[in-house]
Length: 232
Ligand code: PGA
Image (tube, rainbow, N blue to C red):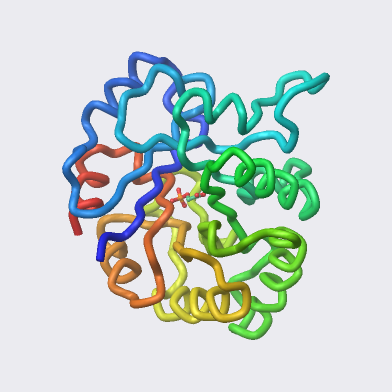
């Protein structure tokens, strides 16, 4: 079974030329299904079979300065859109806003990649983590057919600052338990894991039966390592 690997480039690289070079260096014949999520400004200039966005607005058009809508993403051929990333929640995205974004994506037949795990800490046990996830998912998935959504479990404390070899990822066994919880309680279509995935730990996540893929950030910018991961 192919796993889903979604590359979150975040605010990198700083030139279109480098973005195109990076995209061109990622294998299009990988063993797993790969989605590249470059910065919004490069979306129409990156060639790759599956392209995703890193965020969107909840309305399709209107007086909303600086926003990008799912309708516009759809028009560019974007198939996936990350919503609710902890780096967006940190700068003000509420659970209600995230719910609006999930619904707006689905209305355009774009698969939302709903990130949860903001507010979790490394000290929490599984039960405490599921409490945080419940609070987010109850609102984020309200009125949504969750079978159409990819939920990304991203324990915020494990997300790298850019170099996923310097931070500790969550245990694959813990991530698997959270995936089972999210699937059982919310009937999410797919559950993937993200936060400090690298060449050394990716296989551990990809071999869990209930983890359907991964959402690598920092390592997705290192073509050699990323190409290795997508073929695991
Ligand atoms: P990281 O980022 O792999 O660099 O930890 C993952 C993410 O924030 O989506």
